[in-house]
Image (cartoon, rainbow, N blue to C red; front, side, top):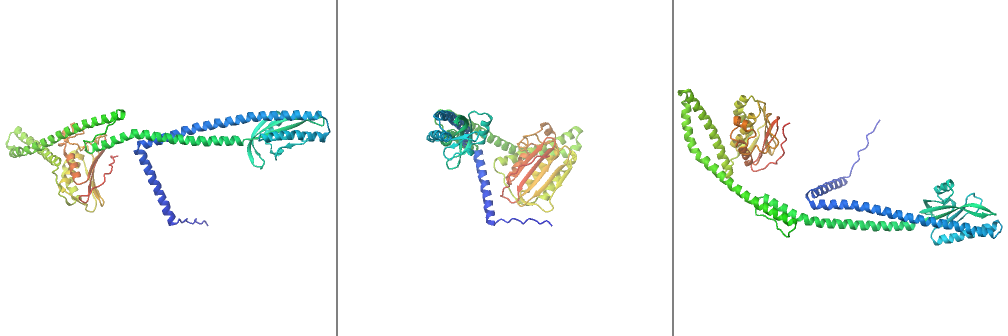
Length: 539
């Protein structure tokens, strides 16, 4: 029977500490990322620090490698020379002793005396020697605690393969039997033994302690110098970057103030260098922009005033013409065919003219800041049904089917019914006219804070960049098409102002050939605002 492993319990205090650590790490990562993205000086200093660190590290590694190789090569040359001199001295002194004559014990003692002289010479130069009989019949001598077992096997293999002087780098025990990295040189020698020449091997063990200490000193000095160099480069780069970035930051702050409407802001220009020339050019640009903006504001005020005055002035003669046109339209059956058709055309064009005049007056009120909002608690479900019922004949003429999705419960929000009904009517009529006979979908959703009405068609759609232009006054995406089916070109502009007056958002998105979608988002409570969320294009 398999048993389930016991669950590991974590102490609540540890769990809180882990969560706090994770939160702190995420906050540090967020702040670091923000600092990296928002500060040019930080990016320049950090990039220079990283690049200079890599360059210095590469340079120091090459330097240390060169110094280490030089120390080892010098040590090798010196050691080989010392080993050759020692081997030659041992052979010479041994033959002199042999010429003096004597028995075997006497020869052994004299050979030991000769080796002791060589050992004293080695001790004075801080290295050790070892004399070992090749055949194992003769005596062996070693300075200090050096014995035949301490000779590296790799060196013995080289001497066996080729009886000439050879050397290896290996760890050899010192006087305290602690392995020390050393250069071991083996030299074959021949010394007299009972009247004959015996084969011996003379080993010189040269410790690399001094070279290792020298290399360590060079490494520490190089690391400290490299660190100072990198820090110095970082400080210099930071200072230079600050001198360059500071005017750029001042220009950015001034540009933000200019964008916020403070057109009198200017940069302080000092000196005659490139930064000063940039500041002077920026100030000249700001002066030109200020002049153009003020000119445009004046023209805009004149235009708005002209539209407002003309709209109001046309209201009275339009009323008179409307009255006369109504009389002619009512009596058109008594007229000849040509006159009757003229009366009908007059009535239709007066309807279009009156709609245009009404839109112009509404835009004038928004431009003058005279638009008032009279909100009341309103259920949007009946309002949406009423708009769809009014648009049904138009949809039938275009061959489109209106598809509606409403919640089962009432959706009540604080709004001005007339304005919102006008917005929905504009959206639905626009979708029908550009839906190319395909279904038009209207959906109403709501939560505790907002209500959302989405109008979706499957017609011509919007070209890239047109989603932000559909609310522009008198803008038409397809002029030829708009002349046949479009209105005044002010409907969506007025709708946008109506929604903004409620504190909401009106957004559009579309894909050519796949249709368009318009979304109206309103707060459920007057005086509150709703967040602006992106609108995905139709798929």
